Image (cartoon, rainbow, N blue to C red; front, side, top):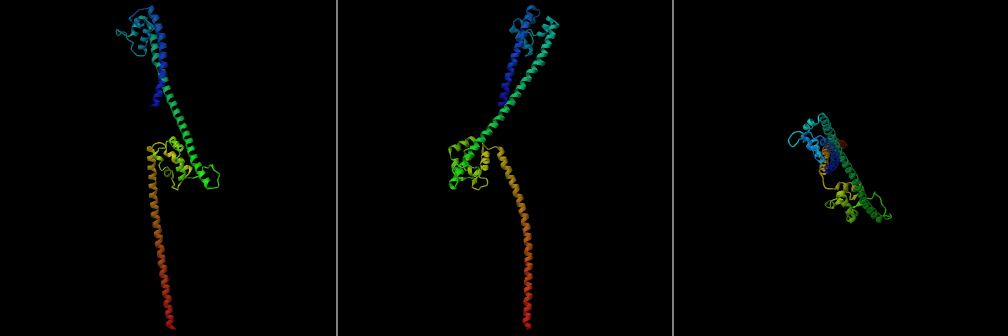
Length: 301
């Protein structure tokens, strides 16, 4: 809609100056034709050029509106050609050719060019607006991250031997620090600037804590807040669907690998158990032979 309105605005400007040019051209030609017909009133068409306004109206109808007929229905060009001869015919042909093949096409070209220029200008405006919006979001995000990291650093400084106000972006933000900073009105204002919905602010810490370690890094805060900006889109749902599909595929592959590994382990276990049984039988057989030999020795003695 913006592109349409910009193109229409630029087109109206072109049409205005084209109308001014046609008005001046019609005035010059009407003045000349009025002088010519006032000195030579031969033919019925001369009555169409008695005054300058009437002549301008006649020229407009002939050259622009394609209505070059007299009230009687006879073409004005035919009557003028009969009255003024080949001089008028050649002049009329030249004027019509210049008007239809030159000026009209020139006006159309300028109109199209102005519309394309308006579209390009609109794209430049949108690009600058996106860049400005990205810069604004980055600055707001930096303010938000600074509030969390400063609070985390102050909380750490109160527990350790560190001067208050020490700032480092490596500090992990705990749940208590996050909830305390998030409840601050200035932080809520930053959430509003970033487009974080109020419903998404409930349990925001759990939403941002991807690895579930009970702490938030700067990367988790930035990535999570960026993902939560604005309303949900179809691309978000599609992205979640693709991630779940990838996880299902990985789970199936892991399941197959685990089954093969279990089969291999079972095979090794069976082989080891078989070797243990063989070793046990050998031990039993050796002990039995030793017992028989001892009994034989005793009986011999």
